[in-house]
Amino acid sequence: MPRARTQEGVGSATSLVTDKGTTSIDDGVVAKIAGLAAREVSGVYAMGAGAARALGSMRGIVGGDPSVSQGVTVEVGERQAAVDLDLVAEYGTAIPDLAAAVRKNVIGAVERMCGLEVTEVNIRVDDVHLPDQDRDRDRGHDGQRTDAGQEPRVQ
Image (cartoon, rainbow, N blue to C red; front, side, top):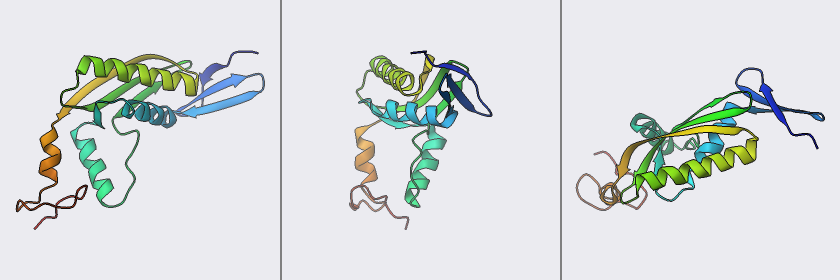
């Protein structure tokens, strides 16, 4: 059976060409796969830099779906892909171990699902999530408890 090879597609898509036909994979698909794979790793609290997380929070408040590719940038070439990730680590997680686990999971998922060789996964840890931050979020501005998972209302 011939091995699929890749060639540059139209726009931001990658094409896998075989004797039986062509398959195009958009950059956004690779970004979603990488984002989901990174979020699967224990110790990853959130994805995206501060501004992106704030925008994602607002999207969630108004009922929009959070973007699974938030905090993910990909460059897809003919046969290879490079991935950049911005993430927030949970406090107490060894960041070098976290980075290694995220790299392994992202590379495995992208290579398995897309057939692209992942040349690099660059990880930028933007913040550390502290356990007290959840407790503070569960209290309103007047110190009263709010429903868990519900943002305090502005008074």
